Image 1 (cartoon, rainbow, N blue to C red):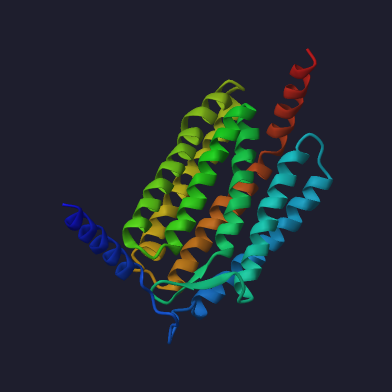
Image 2 (cartoon, rainbow, N blue to C red; image 1 turned 45 degrees about the vertical axis):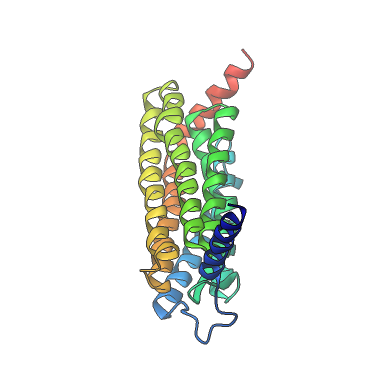
Length: 264
């Protein structure tokens, strides 16, 4: 029996080693093409212009300043990541000799918690609730990254399942917890948050779908992957932040009321 167990363990380790084996050097690497470079360029310019607009708006605002500073950092950090990718930095080759932009995950690890904080401020959710949503988001980002660089197929999909659990936690906060807090602030804030939440929910659901067919199955070309993520980043960051900007008066009234309640 010990002999059979030893042979079984050896067979399992051999299979895992064979599955994990990757070429020491790739003769060719599937890299982003001209279409993808164009998408990186356009998105970078949009993010830079948006950063400047939000920064100017923040310097000329009163109670709304905190929202615009968050929007500035969200678009600013994203612009830095896109500049890195556009400059040929922030990437490596993963299994299958495919170009993988890890700069994107560095961006998301910073900007998505800021987006959650922005939505939390708009909704009026408590610090503990916002922290819970950010924790779920960090799980999603790290698990997605680990799945992308995994060599063993079973390990990759296990990380993918963990990432789905993480993003599910974020979506529950957007759809239920934050919404409940926004409803308690009145119909005007409830309507504003409802628009922001539905945009965020729809876009965030699309991220793991793109991952599934790019870093997952590698069905999408690198250029298509870059274009898809660029579109999602524009909607989840730029469009959402401009929607917040358009509610300037509502945010001012809500922030003033919140400040008054603290001293009653």
